[in-house]
View 1 (cartoon, one colour):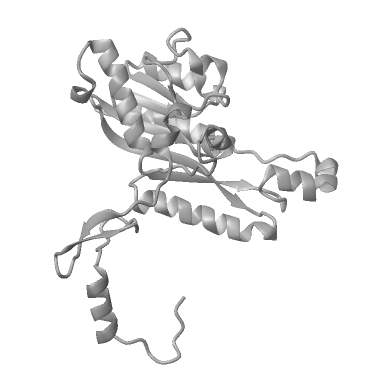
View 2 (cartoon, one colour):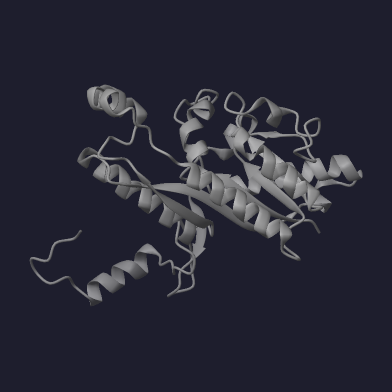
Length: 271
């Protein structure tokens, strides 16, 4: 069985998710990060099958780890406080709910707004005086370093999957292949370096590029109800809530019984 690791350029994916919304039939696309590694695994299986002549269902790779590399804003404008809190909650969700390995790196915004649009609209005069732009290169360097380190490690991975469109990763893709590992590219059409669309011709990939634009319907976040087993009464029930890893789920009846047995003190507020 092929072993694969996924390396996601989170800053690039965040900035270019609009490209996926443009092809969404409902025009309200939100990416389901739980499904993303599964879609990549299945697309990679098709690529392996095309090379080996086997059935794709027989060659699905084992996704050993999914790394997500993102920025952690610091020294930002006070208007962005809630945005940063939401971002930190998102990173925590990737870790605790979906099992991602999340690595974040501080980006100093020098008191400016985080969004490029907000900086242009609200900080324009100060930007003109300072000629300042945020630097997120540490994120790229960390991804490349991790991808190389895991490729060089005995038993690391057979296939390194890069989720990005940034041409700065061309050297690391070539170096990983020189170490005897295979590489695959997952990107977004309209947000990818030209070389990423022809990886084999450019000696940066062993499989056809996976374009997320073609998987929007599958990757759309849908709050459907799933079947869980109540940790108390052992009955099955449905809920749209997504528990964290190791978190117990309880049916409505057992939750109601607990509330009756443990009434909230009068005047205590629910957060």
